[in-house]
Image (tube, rainbow, N blue to C red; front, top):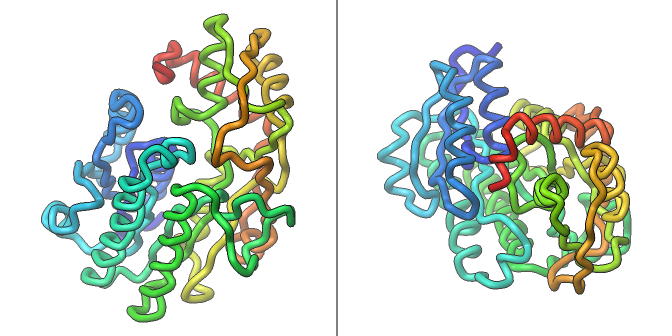
Length: 324
């Protein structure tokens, strides 16, 4: 238990954020969820997540935009012990169509949260970075000590910018900054625009699924509760002032294998609509998790098919509403 400890979770009404906020509140933290309920996907999904969180008396919800620092300062009078900054415009493909707004939200928003931390004396800052920062590096599994990451999408570039801002604030203002590079997180409450959720919904409806490329692309899928466990480790970490750490599963699954596993878990045959590869997509993601294990005690425990089954159970319990 953590009586008296206060955590600010940005993006806390979303997929990963709601799971984290629920876990923190259950562990005894006071939790402030900051979210602007962006309509990138259905706001009803986020409101359902907030309803789950409403059971915790020491959890409060603040509806504000991370791009408005003054509004955040007015709405959050408390000084958090830790900030977990998950809020961002998400998605590689949409960022190619709208790079300016991604830069504004993801970079300026991170700057604002770091300024908020500096002014309030918050000394622990956990930042949601992304595996996309590695671009198409052929040196797999990807390690954090890569000299110069080479992102190939605006979204990825904003995540590198966030890490660099964190290094500056760590150096100048003594804020411990832990950048966690997430690798394709999945599980209950997953965003409906992501492949597993989208494919499952379409397959259950007997509709074709859009498959970009030839099915050979590979992803390091990480179950959401394993990701949350890694975040908890970062919240407690005190070993150094700045770190960038992969949170993956140290395994890769091909797109073709994903579809096959979904067919087995759902009991439905996929109808495939083959489509050209998308710009900004990478052929494979694969995390080295040695650093996370050493520094955070991180050990992903959920087998891919088991995680898919848990996602299926949630989706069916929702009556597929979460995918609308």
